[in-house]
Amino acid sequence: MNAEKFVFSQITDLIHPEQFRRCVQRYSGDYKVKTFSCWNQFLCMAFGQLTYRESLHDIEVCLRSRQEQLYHLGFHGAISHSTLADANHSRDWRIYADLAQVLIKRARVLYQNEPLAVDLDETVYALDSTTIDLCLNLFPWARFRRTKAAIKLHTLLDLRGSIPSFLSISEGKMADVRILDDLVVEPGSFYVMDRGYVDFERLYMIALDLAFFVTRTKSRIQFNRLESRLVDSETGVRSDQVVWLRNPASVRHYPDKLRRVHYVDQDTGKSLTFLTNNFALPAVVIALLYKSRWKVELFFKWIKQHLRIKHFYGTSDNAVKTQVWISICVYVLVAIIKKQLKLEGSLYRILQILSVNAFEKVPLDQLLTETPLQFEEGSLPKQLAFNW
Image 1 (cartoon, rainbow, N blue to C red):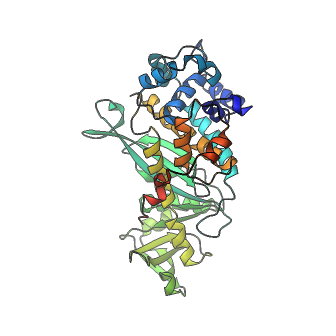
Image 2: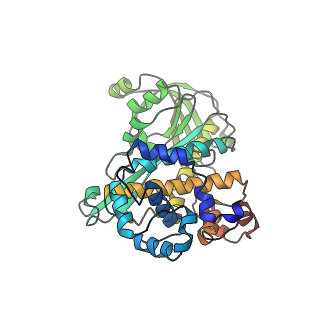
Image 3: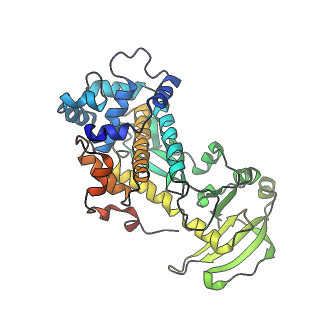
């Protein structure tokens, strides 16, 4: 059956129609819409992401050049860049945010047995944000500085398979630490963050939810040492201490003990001090957990390089968020394909093959397994060195 379908249709068939319909109905996306439905909008935008289209006009030209095939791709009705622009401007971006969450839930099940950098049964998340620069003249609603506009993409990445479990888009000037207020903490899980998220009141809420955090401490924070543990200096660990916050105001926000681990990276010689509320894991595992945070940086670099989230098709707040969420949907769809077909190549390779074969009638498993491995230079771990 797949041999009779276009590659693009095989990708979008991974989205269950009933799940998509529920996302649309939740926000009345197709209310009074006669021709250009939310599904058409999604297909156009997903096509633009998958094939690297530069503009809505570019999407229109490419799709109209295949006019006789559009019905078989799932399109119903005429396609024009003005109609697509109106849809991006007016239809609630949360439709596609909810769709992304449906796909993410499915992908996380597929990747739940992926190995971690350390031997742990618990779920490990890395939390970070990336700033997406915008032109202030075109995006005045996203003012960041006096002459600059920007938005932030906050991501909580499940390190088993690098699947984002939580995403949020905010104004560029919002402090990263505030996103902790929006997280639904899972008991027993680990949350790995850089020192920009050190806020003892918020960290204590994670501890009260019976979860664990690993972060770097700030130099100005003072502690009282309660206990020193034995360490193996050959692992890079210099000290492992149980501490109490010294500042009375900090104690009010975090009225409990903390663990402070001093670690020296043996490759770079860099000295690092971590804070955690986990007292059971070996100190070197705490350091390795923090080191695994580099995966969220790879995720940001990957989507910025290979998806359309730095150049936007529309200038309104709704159009920008719609485009970002649909790009996340495309990323997760590629991740699902990789896992379902048990492919060994990188996501970059898979995306490149799909992008140039969207109108071919070849089964995905045949297309992606028989194509020679020739683009592996795009594999991000070779491009981004870890930075503590």
